Length: 334
Image (cartoon, rainbow, N blue to C red; front, side, top):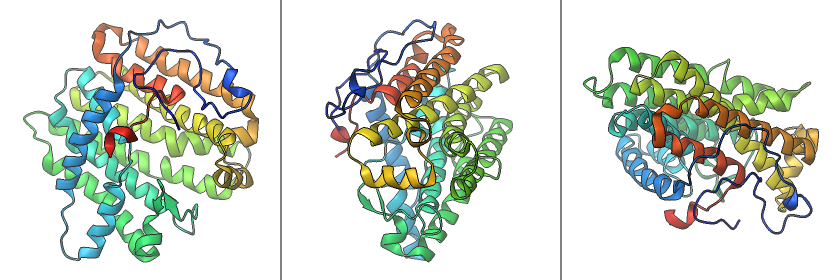
């Protein structure tokens, strides 16, 4: 896909030039919020990815038994990963005056949890995906047994990393407990695990539940954890949850629209068979309306945090990136 360099505030869902008809379809802006000034999200995001990649590399050294750690590192350190959960966590922490160094352990833990969930999602008994980001899935490269163990090991490693690497001089223990509880809830039976179950079983309105749980929950958790670390109020943390959930689902809805129109037939056909895609269930027009509403909801939550000034700009820009895909991070990560 072709992207520009800097996020824009255009009220359109960006679609590649090869997309028929829908490319000229505007997402009608129902939000009353005023678009914030332009922010160079690409530079901000790319710089954070480099820092987070370094921290992740340090967090998972190869030890005995070597093959488990190699499998863990294969997925966590995979090239092309956007690191959206940890970057959102750091941005939310800095919004409230928190130090990004204090946020990095939790940011790394979120990426470990994210990688573990993808390893398990790709398994033959789950989504049965042989590849991930253009490379063999963990189970394709290391075997199903090792992939299960790698995912199982990454979940608790994330929790341990938060506790062992976050200085209580910067973050009180009570906040760390809140962060651990937030992540545990997100990955558990009322969060991502529930979404994966319904993803497998299907049922009425399954696509809405699956998208919210598999994608919205992690966005919600990432933003909330950043606020918790920085000492945000309960009301502000709830706004971050609402914001993160909207952005997480928005990203996936736009992926569905792009997938329908850019020739990714294998993925689209697979999703249609299981009724996973917003487009396959509701059609392109309805999916566009859903994306419009989600974009509006996310920005309305941020409008209530305007007293923090320019510190909120990265979070605003994430919303536009989720909808517009205004640049390609891969150009900077090679």
